Image 1 (tube, rainbow, N blue to C red):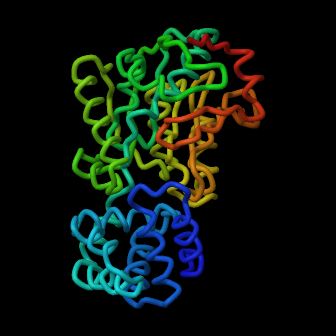
Image 2 (image 1 turned 120 degrees about the vertical axis):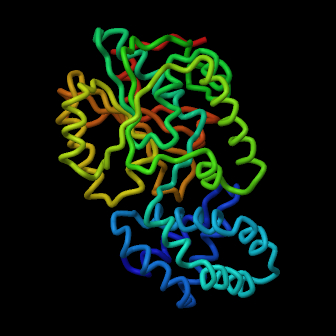
Length: 344
């Protein structure tokens, strides 16, 4: 990973159309790399050495989260500085004083942002698909589960009705329909995050404060109504360990939400291939990824299934936090003609 690539990524992320607390940090990193900041280059070199499997977008995001964690007051103070040179000086000071702590977090953690609304589209897809393809012992796994709320949210009508009206599909809002689940699993590489680490992954803005309040509300509802789920620590890049997990747990359907962008492109293809090869029939896999490596607003949803070589390019969601609008992509009509959804 070259500094030029990181600078380009930082500048692209710094021009994201939504600014909810992180855009200024990426702009500053891009400026610092253009100025050949010794502190930034030294920190990035150390982080790349300890975690070579991070994508540029994920590495920069994780460094921002680590800065926010070790010095919670640092980013607001940096943003208040009157000039870009003063902001860069303050960031370099944080790196000089806290570089080892920042690097340690980058070496041991991932962006564990946990969106309370990201179960909405999988709920609709899975309920539609398995209404026709019945599997008596259906096992679902959420890969890269983070805090692990999505496998517990499935079939929770209270949460669905709370959030679904804010995500409108072309035909309206899908009617709630339960998925015939026997068990649901959360899968991720340790250490599993706690709520404080997840809070650090949220940006500093009113927008993210509202999203975090939704997460706390969700956890309260799940404590009363959430389905029981088992959690497994598996490194998704360890093909042998992942294969063993899939064979031992007979997984029929899976979900990857904002996971692939964190790893290099060649590793993404291998991960998807392993899941497709080792899941039990029908081997349904939902993949949701940010548009253009976190540089454009929203996300795309693809669906893989056994017996079909290419994925269904299903839809785009206008906001990656699953508010706004669902827009059909080229395979939307074909998929939902076979697996109909009833709308409110």
